[in-house]
Amino acid sequence: MEYNWDFATIFLNWRVYWFGLQGTLLMFAVTVTLGMFGGLIIGVLRYLKHPLAAWPARTFVEIFRNTPVLVQIIWFYYAFPILTGIETSPFLAAALGITLNTMAFSAEIYRAGIQSIDKGQWEAGKAIGMNFRQTLWRIIMPVALKRVLPALTNRGIEVFKMSTLASVVAYVETLNQAKLIADLNYNPIESYTAVALIFFVVLFPIVQATYALERVLKRGDE
Amino acid sequence: MEWDFTPALNNIDILLLGLVNTLKITGLSLCFGIPLGLLMALSRLSEFRPLSMLAAFIIEFFRTTPPLVQLFWFFFAFPILFNVNMTPFTTAIVTFSIQSSAFFAEIFRSGIQSIDRGQWEGARAIGMTRNQSLRRIILPQAVKRMIPAFMERSIELLKTTTLVSTIAYTDLMYQANDIAQKTFRPLEVYTVVALIYFVLIFCFSQLSIVIERRMARSGEGTVH
Image 1 (cartoon, rainbow over the protein chains, first blue to last red):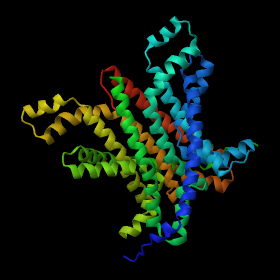
Image 2: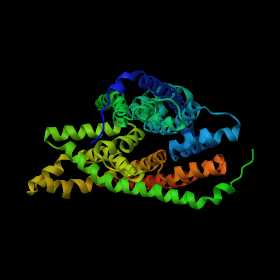
Image 3: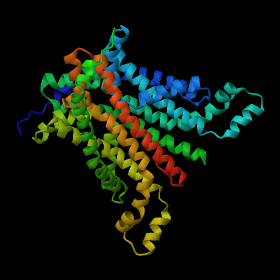
Image 4: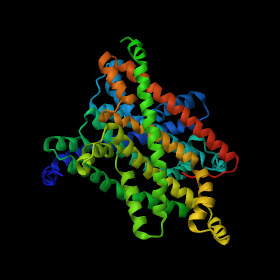
């Protein structure tokens, strides 16, 4: 095999990867924060009995859960500006797509959490004179959030991996930088292996922590 | 801004050809991914430590790295490393088979582990070996519980296949990019394509909800 191994370039160019990783982290931080906060609102709206709240929320969730996130990003990059006249930068297009997708997925997680709480808790809230909102935020939500924490961290891990899709619209993140290095130095093996390892090293401890968290919560339930 | 769907609708045959390719990639990856997932789950549950640790590592690696990175690795790095030719099609099948098998392995594992210990002991009591009890007693019960999780994962796979457009395989997403560029009508083309994906995936998700409800009604447990 006539391939010149070239790991040196990877190490010499660590700043290029670091710059990319910063892009990945920024994309992740923005989308996971907005997505999970927005998802909480949508999830509660879906739980409400009022059709004017529940139906728009349901439609939103179905649209963004049942289309691929890459289609959403591309749509926001190429189609959205024509429709609204608002130019979307690669960052904005990718952030919009991933955030709305995360909102839809996490809304379903929150809703499942709220529904898993025993009816007696609602009645107890009412019995001590709390209104719907007070019962929801003071009694139901604290328990529900604890229950859905593992599902939310799993979603967070998915969001982190999803950030690579931003490279398709030329947002500067880790994978994009790896491609740059590979194209300039003709060392695709080293460059793409490096980016895979970066993701593994960042996410593996988080995944293990999630497993531990699941075990702790399970034990607490018993 | 005026909507004009004619360019998109005039090229609907090209889009549908892309849809067929999307389904082909999804189907083939499932055909390879599910048996491979079972193999990895059994390795992970094996009492032979090195084998179970290796399986655990492979599963975790493919679950924690982004599918787009895997796809690029198999497309750009793998052919040089092993001196083989990889077309976009074979790259897609190899990547998504392995990627989804890591997720299927975890579904198999939780399915197998959800079966009561008494079933293993019962099989052993009537003289079955470990292999026989797995095949005849444990798996038939476990697989039934896994059906909803399988369907969910297959839907995820269908959505993930859009990534093959980045290595120039002519799936639905790629055809959409192509037509959007040629007709200068990205708004309508991408909206139509999003709609096609939506209808397809929505039908599959509704089907999986129906199956899950039916199983819940018949008292059958499910795993995720």
